[in-house]
Length: 335
Image 1 (cartoon, rainbow, N blue to C red):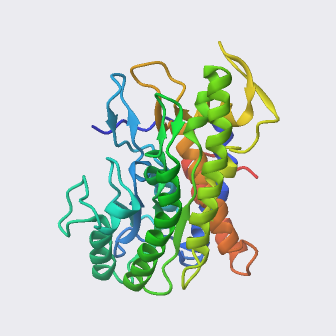
Image 2 (image 1 turned 180 degrees about the vertical axis):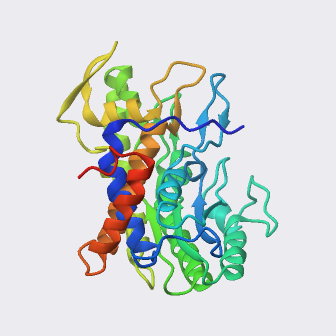
């Protein structure tokens, strides 16, 4: 079951332009004077990771399903403005996927011809050398979430200690193998994580204590994962979803309907994920369409940082892109 995409609100249009500009540079679109040719050979965007990479959301009955509303879908849709032949290939596992199962150290819960996700990705990258223009990866969230018992509000210190040591080491191995399979020039972009357990804030003093502790754990964990990304042989830029979700901001308050004032980090998790939704859809850690769009924006920021938009050829390319956007939505192309 794939849930259809909802229209994007007008407020996302400036982000759409920036996303397209970043992808224009990153994906190496042709000169502005030559319109894209739909007959060109396919180009591929490979999305790897856990259920977030597949845009998973709960249906009205509370069952999780992949959707076409994930951050990878957002990135691919705008990428096609400049590379119409761009094809999105999702190899992420929509059931629980950890760094260990991605590596094949424990059995994967998803079927792969090559037995586990990383081997499947390596086979794809080698089979499409020169045709893969972008790889994104989010992995490691489930490694840590298994250490937190939402029902009891307890955290397993031994599990946390083991995860803090093993997950970054596994990620370093994953990145090294991806780089070897992809070659030195293919952009690979990683991702850190928001903290779904901030939703515990709504449960009173005990829940608020758990929320604060969970933020400490998630931010420490994100730092470790970022160390693995930045320490790769070819450093991997990181989509800062932690910051995009205001994860550490307990100071500023936002009023949520039927709830009242809450810290902005709690509000973001409630608005952009299904964690605060009533049963049977919630609580659910996955992003809503708006949350996945925010994640896509974090990938854009990472791409812009790695591929600055002020290089010489960009001005003419940007003009061509603006024309393309105008045909899709005149308001989107407005300065």
